[in-house]
Length: 88
Image (cartoon, rainbow, N blue to C red; front, side, top):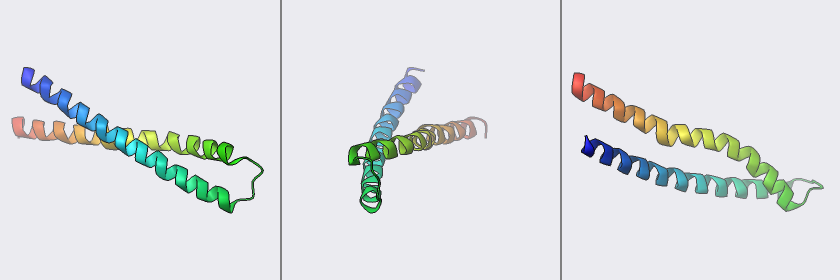
């Protein structure tokens, strides 16, 4: 039982590090894309306000996708493999 808890803690720590890295890279890529859109558009907003609006919109969609992709899917497959190994 202690081995299971230890392994779960390690898995969650690794998945959290992956989530943080992907979140950072995703925000950075979105910021670059929004900056490119700003240079192409003729908007009265300042660059900073345009960037904040674009990042806020992107952040909402990215967070849900990352949580599902980084935490739920790997844990589902790990649970499935454990179930199949025990009862399959």
